[in-house]
Length: 164
Image 1 (cartoon, rainbow, N blue to C red):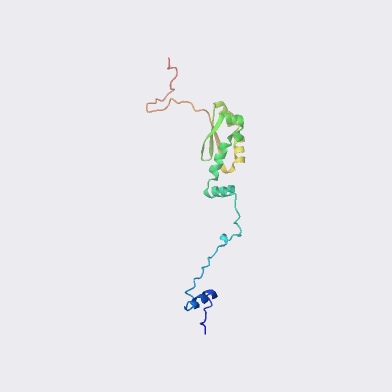
Image 2 (cartoon, rainbow, N blue to C red):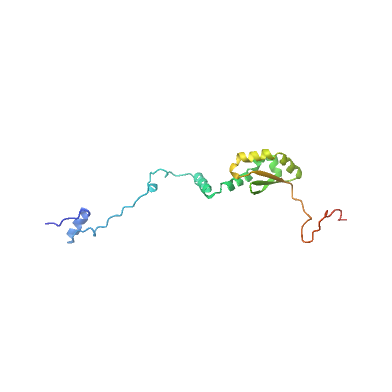
């Protein structure tokens, strides 16, 4: 009379064990452990569609908080479009600090003209680059050498006709 077979053991394993003269037991059979699969790992689950590189980079920059910095960089690169070609030939953005964009001009005449156009330029910046965080625009004239520096600088009018 054959021995009763444990129901948890497949029939082929039980037959093999019986032919070898071993009693079929649950320990002799290794069950495959079923892996618990999350919904995110299912091949056709929602949200598993491939994404474009642009979408992935946009979400990365948003999560890292780089949007405002990248918008300021875009503003500097597109300065010719924002200010106009003629103006961009004579000016360049040089600094951004606490919401103020500083633009340096080739001459004081250009700086004064841009001060008159400040509201137009600022509104154009806010329209094109709202996430840049620009709240004010400051225009500077050209860098001129200063005679007022060093440990032995003397207050006063500075050098006048001292060269000959």
